[in-house]
Length: 167
Ligand code: ATP
Ligand code: MG
Image (cartoon, rainbow, N blue to C red; front, side, top):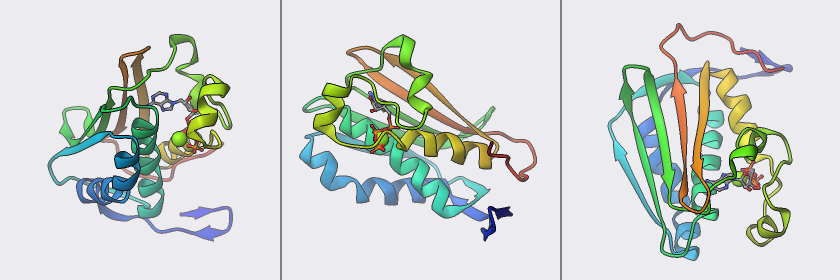
């Protein structure tokens, strides 16, 4: 796969252990926000670009911690379903208003700038997730309830792995 002149190689990646690694790297952030993170599931491999997958899962989990409530929870599940391999991240955080749930995937888009200022960030995280998903024939789906929490579902389809197109 040749992305803009940079050679990147797809390899078999165990999403479960990758997710565990990512979450342990985020442990200090979770502690700072008094958020409890739990990872469950089973070893599942996908063919992909390790560094990109790493970045995607990192951004989703980081958000679930950053936009949570004091003493909140983040549940991460990785496994196989009838629809494909999934990474599901559920948080008990502030939630995202219905009318902005699609916009959060745009570059630099942040909900409620004043609130987001405290948490810090550039608003690029989820656009990286979106582009990473395209590279892997995956989809990212958000389901959120304001004040209650958010569920992010990353699904790797069962179609033959091939070159993704990023436009
Ligand atoms: P960066 O990830 O670049 O550090 P960011 O977190 O602001 O900055 P994104 O990860 O792209 O950027 O998220 C965009 C916006 O979507 C966030 O600013 C936040 O308002 C909202 N958001 C994302 N994930 C969640 C979540 N789990 N709960 C509530 N709001 C969220
Ligand atoms: Mg982010």
